[in-house]
Length: 168
Image 1 (cartoon, rainbow, N blue to C red):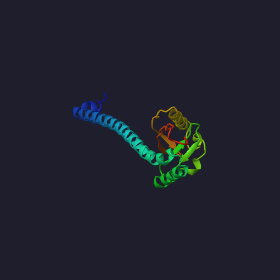
Image 2 (tube, rainbow, N blue to C red):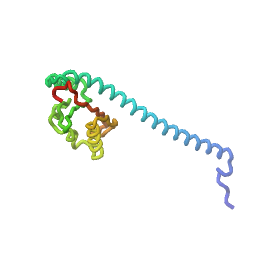
Image 3 (cartoon, rainbow, N blue to C red):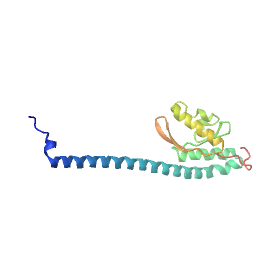
Image 4 (cartoon, one colour):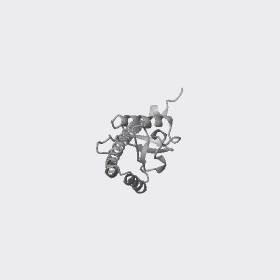
């Protein structure tokens, strides 16, 4: 006759394996839940910080722009480019023409051509969708896009034409 397995013969081993199994499941579930909440909190914090930074940058840019001082507006973009090299800012007109940018080579190009060749098709579609949403006056959802293989936080803010803006 065949002897029963050691697990079947030992009540202590059965209880130990049950406790180990429950512990592994509990820790795994706890880790998964924690990672999910941490990711959500991180995205929320990034969004809040980007919106605050966008507001501050807009204050810098708005002053010369609303009075039509093209030279001073360009100087502000040049200053921002040097001071915050990891931040890319582009302002495009209603027809997609980039009028100001922290990347001088982007000026006078079409906004849909920015980062061409550096984004996947799905990220490019989301980039363009957010731009179209902004054209309608709504603020699109902030997203993380892969630009050149690097995660890039992408925030779009519509700037409505102002009566006081002489060149909008």
